[in-house]
Length: 419
Image (tube, rainbow, N blue to C red; front, side, top):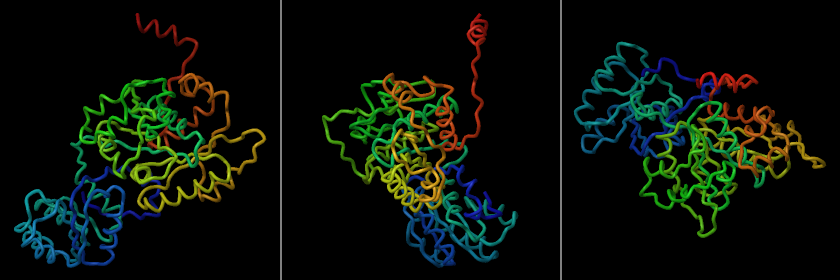
């Protein structure tokens, strides 16, 4: 796919926010650049979360250096070539083809914007042609796109929800947002409860499955689509649960990449994966948050939450320069007689507005928790139910969805349809 115009990162925040680029698998990428600007862009792309598994090597010299390098060495999965002229592109590619291994994909970065040249490049087997100057996101999109063709299965979107502090209701919000994604947006989804010791997803959905996420994380060699399907507990037509055992018969210490195989496998089978991330800071929780497509931080309106939310927001924003910044919401707003930091001061400190401010409604939330129900099930017309839908739409990039509104004639119409 030829790139006739390059994106300006500051001017395309809205488009970038809704763009979903599937991460690349474990591949080797070698770039041969002619300018320091392109080398810097490729280096920045290599630090993007979606190329986290790729092994990237950069050197200068352009086409000539690539031809010389591969005379005596095997070629990687992907070669990125920068060329500043037109006449040497086709001839150089012909020389490269003589030393290039079968199956290697080539991305060319040039300065000639011409359809005829592009057709010649495609005829010679070039996978992508980018017009310089390139931005880091252009490189990420191009390399990842080589391994995500229209014929392949769509890669699921991972949404991570985490609390800025313990007890702020992040798990409750995660479960209700997942319910809205599945019911109102009709998107097949799975909730992965990552708090293995004290997870509440099973209680909130009134499920008690005999197996769950612990069976997968402690048996990484067995993780595949069929194995995970057996561990899922069906909550609704569109919502599944990968439950935590919520027992203390073992210690849940994990390595940084412990959940990678689970997340990668879920991506291949589910359009949306909602991660209920516990409030702790470890290698694997940090990796889960940075690797997610979108993040929601849940905070209560007090000083400790403000400090923690800002620290998390700033860290995640810096670690994901090519993604939109994390989203955050305020929860438990308006507790009687409790001094609170107002929304304006919170937004000023974080330099971003909360997507919603959920009011303190102990009766509704308490009843839902004790009954194993969602807020939408016991208070369908409450404004909080609408807030969960707003969050679901923002996190998934889905627009307004028409909801089926019931009326007093619905039971009668249902009986008539049945007849």
